[in-house]
Length: 153
Image 1 (cartoon, rainbow, N blue to C red):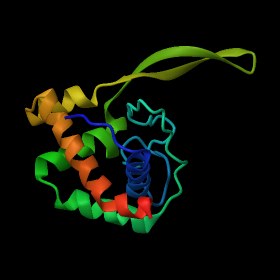
Image 2 (image 1 turned 60 degrees about the vertical axis):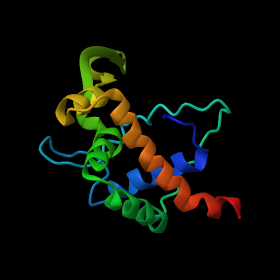
Image 3 (image 1 turned 45 degrees about the vertical axis):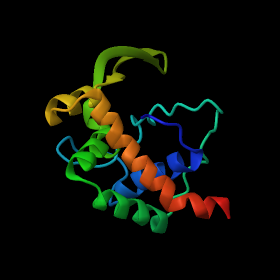
């Protein structure tokens, strides 16, 4: 399916992602803790022929809770796909060691070069690329249905 969705769908999902990661710390502090990774998080590739850019995320817990209710009502497979795609995506980042200039000196750094979440999900969940995309579309359709009348009013 992989249909196009209005920008408000993306905005609601991004708000939900931010809400999912709200907690005592906005970034990783220890390698064995699970917190948000905003510094390395990249938004999903949202294909939009119209060039719609979603509005900047304004954290809205009430709207995020509505998206969470949608998530909770979806089948287990779809919820797992959504975890790979959205809420745990930084777990599948691929990094390369490099160097950069800092205050006149070269220093070692790690650079995010890719993310293999979709490949890992298909292997771990034993699903096809099409099944993965159907799960994403199922979620986006439900988010669209939940908020379409609020946007149109």
